Image (tube, rainbow, N blue to C red; front, side):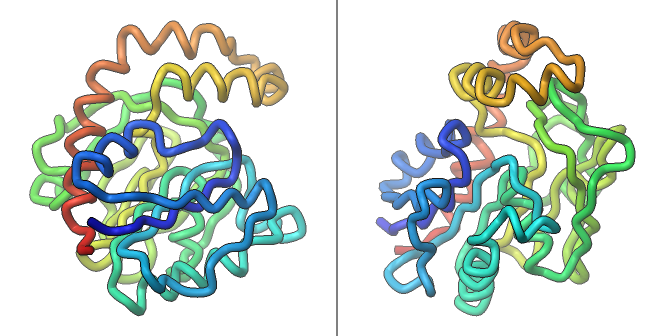
Length: 235
């Protein structure tokens, strides 16, 4: 059993189905709710892994992201300790930024909803992603993209996003898409970010309707990927 530190940036963007994988592996987790001004730990003492979740912030707007320096310091501590790291959406962007990659607003526009992603050749024998189909349809909600960090391997792409996922070393993963989403997560995001959807001319109700077609496969893929990540965490 190990403790996982989870950096949470918005109430509706929680672990989702990642929690089930952690429970199965007998891990426990501690949310650090930065949106409630909870203090980010200075180091990884007592923890076996780090998960960085999504949120509406941008790494290039530090004036609106006061906890970013502390989060980067914690990621660097986990890197020094060779502890498993998982970044999701904004969390993936923060991990990319910590590794020295550029994170910018996507010139192709925001990618919100159910969109096809493709696995790169490196994913076919990747520890987490092997066995997934070459194309699949995860849930997306992001307006920023990142370059592949130096020394990292790109694992997935989509029409709007050249790098949807990467691996650094053997235990650091960044996923721009949401494999962890549940129907409740998606409904809550559609409600919380309704103004953004209105601006993008996207029907939030249709995002939830899409769960019927796409969520069963997403849950299978997520269970597989997150169970493999949980196995990397040593108590």
